Length: 152
Image (cartoon, rainbow, N blue to C red):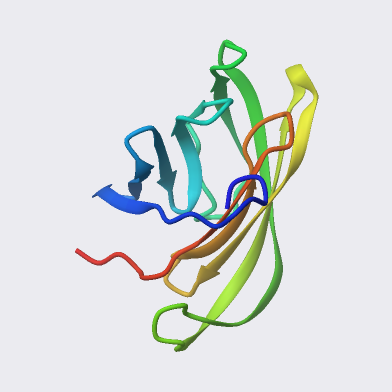
């Protein structure tokens, strides 16, 4: 769901290494890397995140982010991580259970004073089954749930 509105179905169009391209229709596309939205087309405030190292190692890192409306240059954005809890979740499709780790990703873009937290529910293989992400400085959020794990 985008900004706590109705749930929408996005289809996986392409998977190359850890970069996935999702689309709802021809006008709205999201790109994810290990569950993190790193690029958007068709939102009110599209963005692109580069040099993002991700949540794989839970190591603090610095990336660059650029917005399109209003247009910005690349801005430094800092990320840090912590494990919040571990537990059991149920898959949407077959209702089977799996162990998850809930990870909080704290971010801060000092130049514009934007900061907040994102959350990722990740299985033992490092696959993100669910996330809640803030996607712009105006507070817009995307909550995602994966229905079925991608396999080659």
